[in-house]
Length: 47
Image (cartoon, rainbow, N blue to C red):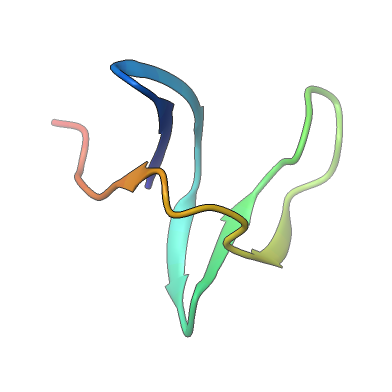
């Protein structure tokens, strides 16, 4: 998942299903499972 503001991507995470993602909320934080907090997301994959 790519979280965006307009055309600017500001965060990425891995979709886990049931409206949740795996991500590190901020630099240096541990990876955790969390509810998606916004509708400003794009779904895709990196090649």
